[in-house]
Length: 356
Image (cartoon, rainbow, N blue to C red; front, side, top):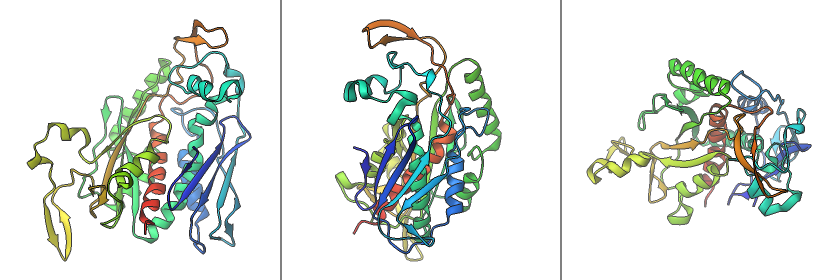
């Protein structure tokens, strides 16, 4: 399915090398003024072709709003946006050679020979651009409710940035990081990460990493137990982002080595507000927000499009062969993926916030 959400429903469409990609957003309240310049800034943060460590494919990623927006305000009816593809080169793609790590084979098994294999088709990370558009709108609505979301690159290969302070991360810090071309806390680590990405590119290879995201201002009591939990709803959106292979909340994998006395977040009250001394559980208990910052990490795998020879199958002949992938690809998608994670989370948090 290409539709997600309970209160805010989003439906994505398009292919990487098709005429365009887009999204329909249903459930937005009418009469909300939208800052279109802020939307453009969010789109440019994710846009391809902006640096030497990204794909050389350049796209303006300008969104044409087709419906649901009039006189600078939402109308309350479905808001649809489309982004035209203007810089496609399809000659690099062979429909018969299935690329390792991509959805070429699984797409073929599901859709048959009609599957659009060019640039990954509908499975391409290019389709995350409409998610950023929807997230940019969601962020503006969340801001009206005092909720702020920000993300940074926590790790590229074996180089790590500082982590967010799980109880002390601030809105100012999130906004400062979002304003950076390469979103990290420690700018010294940025240069090291960029060098590692460049090394992978020169070696005809790629690297992955981890994005850490924080949600501030989410009121306590949002979400539902079990299937409607904050974790499950956030995760279902985050896992829709291509290349995301793990989502960890709070202490994440570190819980496996903790005692209960170490893992529990003890409570205290301050000026009538109940808080916790630690935030190992990432602002969530029983699937419901507890008012502390919601902290989570997403693991993003290395870009599967690499130029090194790899073993594969010629699907038309059902024979073993080799493939060398050419074309314009990111040697690392983590720095652009951080923007996607941030905005995808905004969509999910807004959907949860609107629960009755």
